[in-house]
Image (spheres, rainbow, N blue to C red):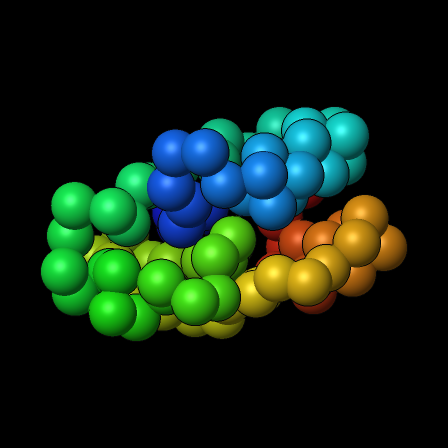
Length: 84
């Protein structure tokens, strides 16, 4: 299982999403991937970041949580996927 935050440098919403994740006191590692230098990721997430993606080890997307979300929505999403 992989948990990824699609983000880019200087994105204040992405910083808010990271702060919400950290405040959720979650033990799962959140990998941050900058979409700026990857055309495929930029075309997919360029107008929707921040996005938290729950993926299998091979990179298949299980589910994604796109902005806007608050701490309640994030916690609900994490619990739904058994991530804690």
